[in-house]
Amino acid sequence: MKLRLNIATAPVDNKRPFLAGVGVLGTIGLLALVFLSHAAFRAWRANRDLRLEISSWESQIRAGRQKQTELDQYFHTQQAQQVLDRAAFLNSLIGERSFPWTKIFMDLEPTLPPGVRVVSISPKLENGRALVTLTIGASNDDAKIKFLESLEKSPAFSGIQVTEERHQDQTPAADKIVMQLTAWYATT
Image (cartoon, rainbow, N blue to C red; front, side, top):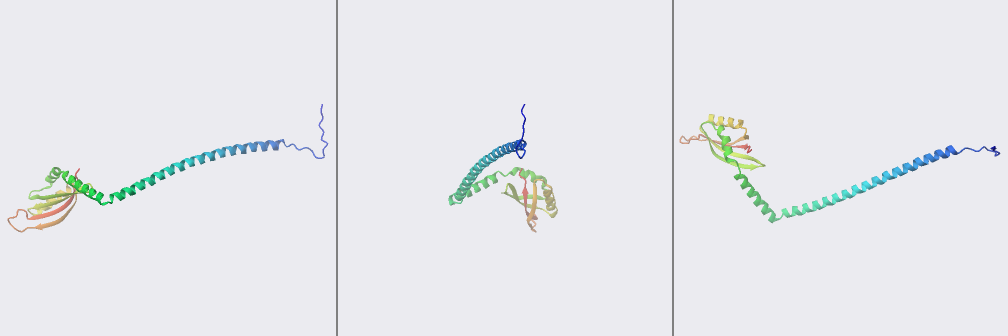
């Protein structure tokens, strides 16, 4: 049997709970340091990848802008302007040839009352729509008004504007009124 006696002047403090607490806190702190260090490393690596991707996109944008500048300079040359003008002229010719003449006559036929006739039709394509200039001959004011009313009701024509109207007092002329008007025509 052993007997423990403390013959010191001060009693021995039991430091085990303190050391255990410090050890637990130190372990927790060390684990937190490892975890946060790992998270910081992953964030740094992700940011590095993003910076690399952004720099590659910026270089592609710079290359695209340089190429666009070169193309702008090319298209401002005399030779390119001549080709573009020729292409625009040919496209306008093709557009005029592809105008649906039979369809416009079929759409005009129900709108023409007795005493009104179409003298001329002149289409012009603007922004994919057809602006039609019509010259109409009418025998009297009533026929002219009936024609304008039926043209306004027609779904094929819109934005109708009378640009000119002449009255002819000569008796041998069949058309007492010659009127010129413009209207947008729905080609589809």
